[in-house]
Length: 176
Image (tube, rainbow, N blue to C red):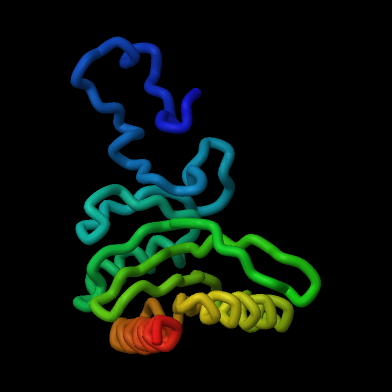
């Protein structure tokens, strides 16, 4: 398999000129497939107008987030699991993959989607604080959304804009 063809076509499509596989339509360039046959829990595809394709999700929170992002007027587009970011935990470098990268009218925001219960856990709060600081040092905005954000569109919109504004100021400060 070459680097250009991460997802080979099925053998029935291999020699068919002009045919596009369904997988090519629903799988953008992301780090990994989210919906897999062996996956547990709520997983599926959401037909997003803003993303212009089927968006994969692996929890109710991610599905509801995709639906909300399609409705928020300041969101231009979004992408699930867009890239891997490095962060320092105080002892070693770690990797982090955000659930969603949202492009707003003010700039990009990386969003982690958690249940309110999980988001309150002290260990996870420390981890998110360290990730936020690491990303901010590179001019990237980071927020954590729970079902409380997703169930209140006005609050979610304000949270996104505030984070995007912080990211914009960080990027402007870094270039000055």
